Each structure stands twice: as structure tokens, then as C-alpha cells.
Amino acid sequence: MAEAKENVLMEKIVSLCKRRGFIFQSSEIYGGINGFWDYGPLGAEIKRNLRDAWWHAMMRERDDCVGLDASIILHRAVWKASGHEDTFADPMSTCKHCKKLIRSDQWWTLMAEQSWVQSLAALGQPGTDAFPTGDLLKWAKGKGKQLAPNLALVRNPEVTLSWLAQEVEKGNRPKDAREFYLFLATEQLGATGFITPCPHCGGELTEPRPFNLMLRTNYGPIASEENLAYLRPETAQAIFVQFKNVFDSSRVKVPFGIGQIGKAFRNEITPRNFTFRSREFEQMELEFFIPPDEAVQLLHGTVAEWREGADLSVPQPNWGWELWHRYWVAQRTEFYRGIGLGADVLDYHWQKPAELAHYARACVDILFKFPFGTEELEGIAARGDFDLMQHQKHSGKSLELFDDALRAAATKLTEEQRCSFVAEVQEDWNDHHKSREDAAAFCEKLFRGVYVPHVIEPSAGLDRLTLAVLCAAYHEEQKADVNGKVEQRTVLRFHPRTAPIKVGIFPLLKNKPELVAKARAVFNLLKSHCNCFYDENGAIGRRYARQDEIGTPFCVTIDFDTLGEKPELLDTVTLRHRDDGRQDRVKISELLALLLEKLR
Ligand code: GAP
Image (cartoon, rainbow, N blue to C red; front, side, top):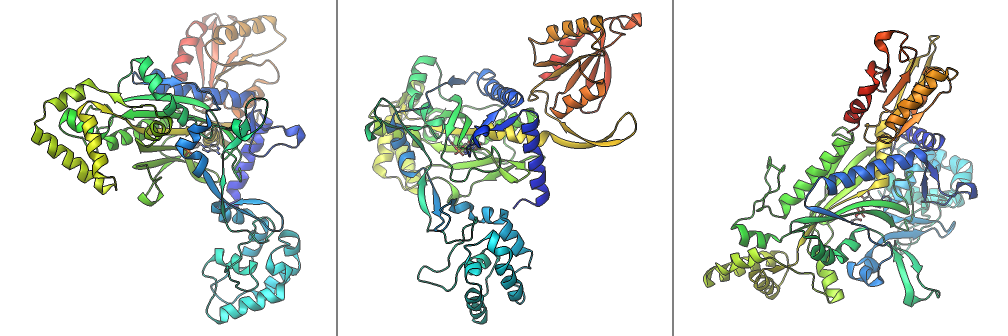
């Protein structure tokens, strides 16, 4: 649970975002709409920079990936086939008193944020020594009435406390803080056991039930079940559905990827932590298609497996799925490093077998250390052939590929070698609870050069990344002004690639037409290459401070030396660096090349 200090930091970031035009609450003048956010002028620039950086790294700089820009609304059958219509749900409870909805798996996190829980916790740790019964009674009759009016302890303090005392007497002392709150919400154990308190009012929560997260809409003039559609909850499915069209039209060969950036929508029960969990957000997803390991075995006689220290820099034809998965974790880590998010702010969660989706072979979450906790930025999953197989089954259309080299490799096998190959695959599949018949049919197709590719999916959230970049950039520093008075200043230390404005351009004085004209000329020189901001108002120190606060990495000042007051400095400017305040004298003729080098 976040410490108070970290909440304060988050509040400062949220407030800066609004004050300087990074992120606003959606529909704010109407009271806002929960889980929706608008990006202001600076936020829109950061998002665009991050979107471009992803597209550049994943599509442009590679010769094995191509892009897609699919519609947000897909045929409803897509979501039936993918499993989203039936199972894309979070467990939800409702408060019987205040009617608020709570995501059951976030109950404790929400509880820990509530002031009634914090004020109770301040009375002392339960479960260790004697219960602070007197304090609890006083709390129930005072603060509790305002903070948690529907908690059993507040509605019926004497009954609840005497029941609690009996339980303690019997040796049923709450074993931890969570159970302590269940005790305070329960007057006596009923058939259903403990009552779980609502984080908002302390009232009784219903049993969790699944709540589908897809946002519904209708297309066409009449809203009916026949034209029900969903706003896509992920961009990935459109890639699977268009996989064959892309393959047939793009001259790509397995292994290859299809990437997409676009909006996704989830009716999150409790959107929270600023933009971290929103109802409308953007994803950047790659579906990277690889041959099944069995095809690699036939083609290359061996499947290279991952081991500690394996070289992941250049993909090899004999890589199996595990090496491809590790490769993408390394590639994505490198991407984050390249935009200024290094090992100090990232972490990894390798999902344990019990956490994995039933079809996934492995999944690693790349985590970022947000002020409110270390949370997921991107998931990289090895999804096998699940998605393409589902769409093949539900659509009745073949999503198989033909590989001539594979067929040729298979024709070289003797009958005996084929039989032993099939037997090996059957044994392997048996370990994964798949039938011998299916394994044999799969091998028969492989021998003809036919298979459905497997998938490695790096899936990142653009809004989460924007928030991560903002949090990593946020710094406060003490600085003395010209009169020696120390003041606290905020500096956003964005990596130059992510910074919304790259260069601030200032004439030293605004009432000197020659300075203004020269500064305008420098602005015109740079503006089509990078986002620049021209500012002629206020003392130069104030102008630097304003740019520091929004993270501009470079400022250029045009002064009298630029105009030739010192002849040797004619047509030079001062280039000031945000992070160390260093100031270099640079020729205008060399400025563009120098800046572009630093912005790469
Ligand atoms: N196709 C796989 C997929 O959608 P996911 O883990 O549900 O996987 C991928 O989502 C990424 O999308 C997450 O790592 C996160 O960055 C982002 N994301 C998911 N739900 C989000 C939400 N409610 N608000 C903001 N970003 C979200």
C-alpha cells in the first residue's frame, strides 16, 4: 500500500499535469466522467512522441514487422471466438447499503486508502495484545459515525464488541489486519461466515460475481440484440482476424509480426490511480507469429532452447518459442531504456504456472515503479496457437500457412523417422493434455508443410507509459534566485525523445527588434524539425524555469553577441541544457545538426 508521502507525490504530479496542460479530467466543466481523461497540448505531444517511438522501433526499424489500423468495432463473433464475451470479467461485489460497486480483488487495496480504516489502524495493531475495546467503542460512537456509518461496529457497537470478545476468548483472535476488519463488520458468524465491509461506508458487500468489462453499443438505426457490438477491449483480436489478409498481401514470411496502436475500452469497475486504470485507453500491441517448435525441429533438426546467458541479440532460424519470448522481453527492455526508463525504475514479474491463462505458455509483466506501487506497464505473453485456432474454428476459414521448405524437409524423412517424430510429438502433447489423435493429425499437416503459427505478444499501454514517463521525469530541486533566496522548483527531466517541447527559443529582450527578428529566424530554422516554443516574455531566468517545469531539454537565447556586439560571436547563440544548467556558445549554422543529434 502506498505511503502517505507517495500519495502526496502523486497529487503533485496530477496537479502539475492540470496546471501545465498535460492531462485534464474529461468533461471537467460538467463534473468529470470517471475513468476518462483528455490530454492537453503538452500531454498530446508526449503521447505522440511515445506512439512514434514504439512504431519506429517495432515497425520501421525492423524488416519483419508490418502495421495495421483496424476498426474499433468488430463483428460480435470475434469476441465470442476470443472468449471475451463469455469470460472477460472481473469479480464484482455491491454494497447492500450505499450500492457502490467494488472490484473484489481490489478490496484490500481500496480499504487501505480509506480514512476510516486509517483512523482505526491508528488505534493500534489488532491481534497482538489485548484488544483496544475502549478505544474501539469511543471510535464507533464518534468518528466512526461519519466515516463508516454502516459498519456493524458503528451501528451496533456493544453487540459487535461483545461478540468479538467471545471469539477472542475462544481463541479465534483475528489473525491479521484484514480479518480484523471482517470481525468489525460482523455481529456474529452467520451461515455465510464473515461479512466483508464496503470500503466506502462499512456496509455489507455481496458475494463476488463476474462483471463483463466490455463496453456495449449498437450499430444501425435500431438498438437491438441483433446489432449489439462491443467497443474493442484490446487491439490484438483485429490482428488475428486480419492475419491471413496481411500475410497474403504483404510478402511477409514467418517469423513476422503485425503491430497496431489504437484505442481500447474496458468498463473497469474501479478506475484508479489517475490514468493508470482508465475506461478508455490506448494500446500498442504486436502479435509476432512464429512456427511451432515441431516445425522448427523438422526444418533444422533441432530446437534451440533458452539457457542463462543465451545471446538474444540476433534471432536464429532454429529458435523455439521460449527463445523468441525471451528475445521480445529483451527487445522491449531495450525500448524502455532508449526513452529513459532504465533498470532503476523497471521490474519484472514472471507469471507462475498457476497465474497463467490456460492457453499461455509463459507471460512476463514489465513493471514500472509508480509512486502508488510497482505496477504493470506491459505484458509479454507466449500465447501458442490459441487465438488463430479459435478464429479458425469459429469462422470456418483456414488460417493455416504453407511452407514449402518444411514440406521439402519432411519428404526427406524415412517412414521410420516419420513414425518416431509423430510418437515424440504425441508424448509431448500428452504432457499438455492433448490427444494422440490431434497430435497425429497435426504431424500429418506438418509433413505437408502446413501449420497454424504460434504467437508471442508484447502488449503495452500508451497511457500507462505516458504516466510512467511523467512520474520518472518529476523532480523537485532547491535553487537560489538572483537575490540568493532559495526556492523549490519543479523540473521534469524527460528524455529528449519524449519531451513535449524540445527547444525553447528566446530573444534576450522583446523590445529590441533586431533580437526578436533573429530569434524568429532561429525559430523558423528549427520548427519543422522539432517542436519548438518561442517566448519573449519575462526575465530570462523565469523563462528557463518555465521550460524546466514542462521538461524542455534545451533553450536557445539570442543576445547582443548574436548580433555581433563581440564580432567573433556574430551569429552564435547560447544553448542552455536543462539538467545541469550548462550554457554553450553555438554557431547558428551548426545548431540544427547539433540538436537533432541530441534528440535522437
Ligand atoms: N492483448 C493482451 C492484453 O490486452 P492486458 O494485460 O489486458 O493484455 C495490455 O493489456 C496493456 O494494456 C497493459 O499492460 C496496460 O499497459 C494496458 N491496459 C490494460 N488495461 C488498462 C486500463 N484499464 N487502463 C490503462 N491501460 C490499460
